[in-house]
Length: 412
Image (cartoon, rainbow, N blue to C red):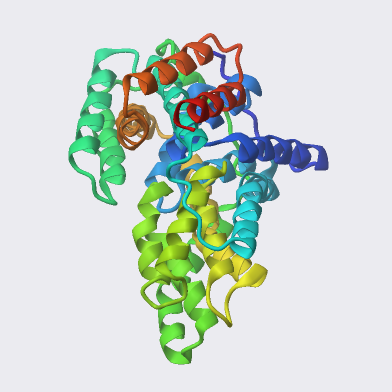
């Protein structure tokens, strides 16, 4: 466990370039969906670069899991903002999102329909994601649930997440963990557990965003959420309809990842903007590229019928689906820092962090494990990947490439 080294924000050009390079590397190599991305992020920002310790990282995970929108992309934005201010959050998003968005736009422009669901190398990538997430769960559990009260919270959160699969279950689990921590767990002290919670809590993390700006961002989020449907109905504009559809989707989905697919399907297939075949082909392609699944919006904007479509449609769809994440994060971050100063809130945050461990453990089983493991050979590949990752000397990209090769050899 690393000490309480937690970086404050810096806005120099060097810091922005550093944030962009780190995010771009993750955007090029992070396969497996939002939960797997958290594992990659932890490896990069906690272990390799040491910008955060485990508790500070889990704090941001808890924040992003509690907000609607793509959790891994929001985590990247929050990390970038912590490191280099508001611009840091923006360039972090660009670096993480750009590779997959460009790949999917090009796929939309130059392909007809394609089915990648049976590709052996794609199955190998899913097995690599099992190993990455398993390592993240193990390391975070050791740090954030080191005693039985917190392990109990984590196990309860895992059980609820597995048994109650609704769009809002993640939020309820985190709030429940926070409430249990506030009521039951002791406040972190100078002699806190080996996870370093008290050190992280006492680290001064000045907000890169003022409270007034945060309030404006929150007001704008709700104004657009309520106003765009009215504007769509009043104008009948297809362009406004596209903005409203993707903005509403980004505003109402918790956790991101595959949870967003039903809303996207209803938003673009039902009105006839995208055919069913092209939607499914794009979904297969989205699984084959690294980075956030929300980049699927760029593909959908590309293949939408005129007057939508092309690069312009991709840009409108991508910005619209991510705009709620920026407004919510920049709106909440200033008040998040203020809350961290409260002893009662610190107790609640200890419980919320334990609940996050439970959520990650549940996600390791489903959809990560259930979506990837179909045979004893699959188990062996995933376990081998985990064995390579645990000592900390093999980077995830090596495991990803090896798993893809083995998967292709077995299924190809």
